[in-house]
Image (tube, rainbow, N blue to C red; front, side, top):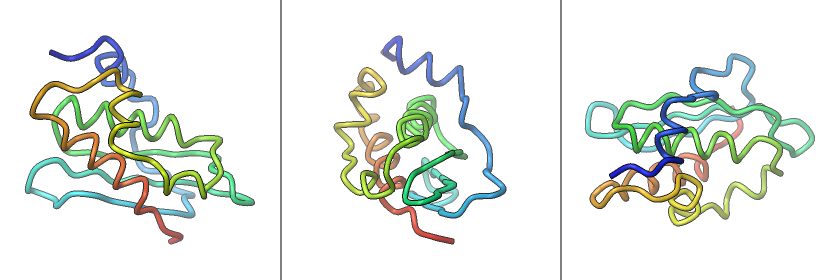
Length: 116
């Protein structure tokens, strides 16, 4: 069962799409082999100004990607390395049993961001 917050994030997809003027990029998963998330950030003076994502996966993967994108905006770049799957689960209000890998991928994607 999906939480109300997870459904809300899935339907909003406010941060979906590629960020053309991104300065940083991250990805997690393997294309064509389950959920795959890409994330783009625009960073200035060590602060995340904008974040966008693309994902190929279920509603839980999409919601987790939206959650990390929304959270990251306004954060210092250094804060991204401390994100955990548990943080993502909390931000989406929980994930159904068997979908824990979606929060792990979203956290890994954010942690993996590097300057382009």
